[in-house]
Length: 308
Image 1: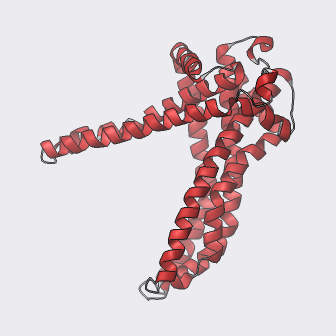
Image 2 (image 1 turned 90 degrees about the vertical axis):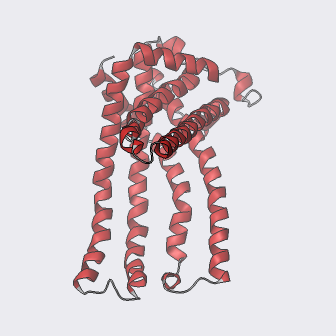
Image 3 (image 1 turned 30 degrees about the vertical axis):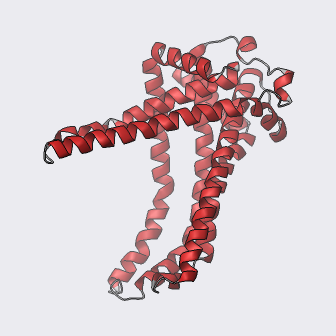
């Protein structure tokens, strides 16, 4: 795989097929909706007053609505993610640029398989974290706390393992959309590519994730500046110890966050679109399948939804 050509092709898809940006942005908008509503309508006076039934019930209702919205977010994310991959494959291999409706229609046959793949990886991640936490707890108890220093480096493995796991997920998921595989077949295909092209995958993962981290830091820099300016102003005025400080601080920050957070999320959604496209193109370059055979058409029976 030519790394430069892969990134160049990914950029070509990203820049010439901007409709895919929409699919990257929508999940962020769904996720941000409750946060933005709470910032817009939350009364700063709640921070300085004692809790009452109205406030308590309001937080409970908000929590329930937030959980429901997170369920919606999960389903929307899988659909938009699948659509980005499908659109990338079609444009890179055939130069096609389906409309939003066509892209969603073509992505639906793969939806539940991609959803199931996400569920498997999420379950494995949760199980691994719980098992690691339980193991560390037992070691700490058995060693009267001394074992914590010895096994703490295990937590440092979470980052590289997560990066490699995410790369394996990207390859497996793309094989579903590209070759119409089932979940078992896509895992076998992803694992075969992962073993055969391990160091190329590691290099691509490092480039994309380090680039994502660096750009996110640059985009978030204004947020940190906005956070510290009122803090330093209050410190200079010796106002941080007054009872009114939480209310004044929240009031000064709220509208700045209402403006900045949507812009930051919009750019982040576009950036994540490129990451998805890059992994889809990487899969094609690693698999080296002929264009005519690799992007098999979805059978008509599936397109009408009867075999989704």
